[in-house]
Length: 422
Ligand code: SF4
Image 1 (cartoon, protein in one colour):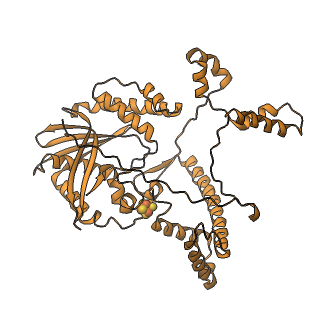
Image 2 (cartoon, protein in one colour):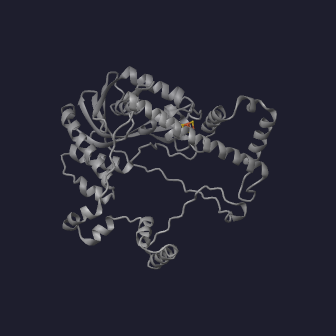
Image 3 (tube, protein in one colour):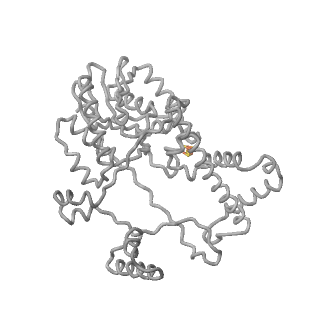
């Protein structure tokens, strides 16, 4: 029996392998800033329960940056206001309630649907309301997530013939709450589709806009095929594509690419393929930058552009705040101890080197900078974090091939079941 998280239902309906394919975490979602989201959820749960919650202290404990802390505070305050407006609809609110229910798909496979509701409350005989805090930047409707929670509540209530579940999705970043009402015919139709179509068809790839957040996007064969098609359309001329020698080259290169391993790292055909791809990749980057500038120009003139599917593209004003050290230090010294200030500070090695050698004669600058680095290294004052930069270098300067890295799979967390309205 496989457990399916309600939060993954929209992704499952969009493309089964993105949730259930090899290498994905069942129930994973694409929250852009999980730390901020987790903090806001925890703070709002305490608020709904009538408990005190010091969001500043929690932000420090979670090591959030100043920007993230401000963002979390703003989202939390929006949530507080939303709760003040919607509180009345919740007779007996309970927070973070897990509900689980088993179901069998049409192909005989067994599943457990599990979801944790941020706030849930009964509202009478066979009626309930739930609320889900949304802290991400995307309003993708969360249509199936809503059905998932409502379906769980309906099942926990014993699948009565009459049932009314109200779902509220509070989009905190955009300050609005979407309310949806679910009844038994709608829940039965949703269940029918899940059991007869979605789960049995879970192995079929459906590339689309969701690929951008999919954990498999770098390895997905369907996505690769689409990308290959786009690159071919944009970069290779129709005459070249029709040329049999070009086709033969592509086939040979694909065979070479399949045989690649640490023991057989290279071949002339593979080299030609990679050089060709490198050229296309650079061209795509230029095309992407140029296209973004073009679209930004249109947005600058139009303000926003409505896209098919109910969203609009807009330039949202943002601010990046940074500390001006000499002005801020006198104030910081009144609030923080020197070691706390040091712990909050980051220094740029490049800027430090520039400052140290600024007043030194030409010819001496390099030596002085090197001596400084050696001195800092000797006391452990420089942290070295290795990373790989892709770069063309003379063939005789290539370092020894590193063994391919593999990552250990992340285990799924398991949560014990709890009474829904308890
Ligand atoms: S990359 Fe796209 S097509 Fe491939 S599994 Fe993910 S969502 Fe599906």
